Length: 342
Ligand code: FES
Image 1 (cartoon, helix red, strand yellow):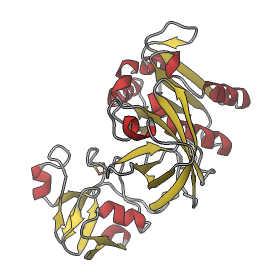
Image 2 (cartoon, helix red, strand yellow; image 1 turned 60 degrees about the horizontal axis):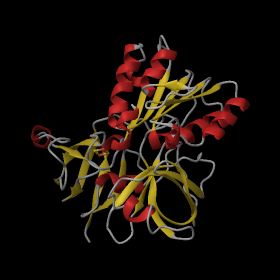
Image 3 (cartoon, protein in one colour; image 1 turned 180 degrees about the vertical axis):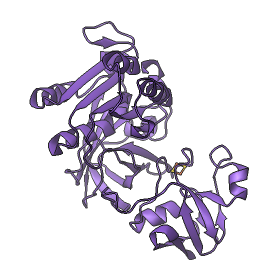
Image 4 (cartoon, protein in one colour; image 1 turned 90 degrees about the horizontal axis):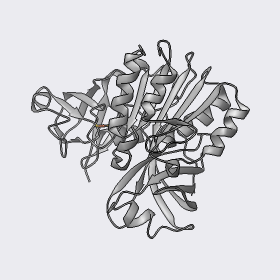
């Protein structure tokens, strides 16, 4: 297969990209960090200007990349493939000296060592890798679903200090090829898994001065668990407040771990919140629980992970409480079973 040279002018870095491969993936494999999030063509964070050369936009949707943008020479890095040598400029600026550790994308193989039901329709999947994978807390990996050609992204829930043993939280999607069709059906302890990672730029990779509010809906807890455990171990933030939304107590998990962290760290608090059950803890939408606890969010930052409706409500709520938009970090996933929990 032909490959073309792809040059990121602002960074003066070059990658070889196969003619049938995505520009973003070729750069990440080469260790060239470019802004991205979903890698599925939906978020638009990987947009780049094609300064020289020609690309094949492949599956880029008009929703994410408008016809006007195409006409102006913009491409989605995660979808476009090179038709010729390219010179590119990411639309979002990349600061190579921002202090954030960058880890090249790699293919990995591992063995399932834990596969436990931990909450309603949620499994904890732990994979022991053949080779270590360095990553930042909050990043994810793409797991290949055998025999289907499909791949699904799951965030690492373990801290980055555990480079060989990756923990994922998987919610069953009715009829889903990866979940109903595999992880909740045929997958066993001892099974082999193939994945690639790390991917994504959500997370808290370096220390920050302001306290942080972490808000999770359902299995959106996974990257926030990684962030919380890592940040507490390395004093990355003066205070961490973790909120986890579910419908009933059956949706909560790792409660004891977070209670334990509360006992060990005076600067950590844990707030499970239930939308469909009266209990001794917080009730209602998890984002409302945050609003109730913080009359002002000025000078704080937030990390939100969950279904789109929760993210939207959370961003609105935090802005209403005067949090600076650039301090609101978000990672959304489609998880319709939790829309009631937002
Ligand atoms: S559209 Fe989300 S990373 Fe490319």
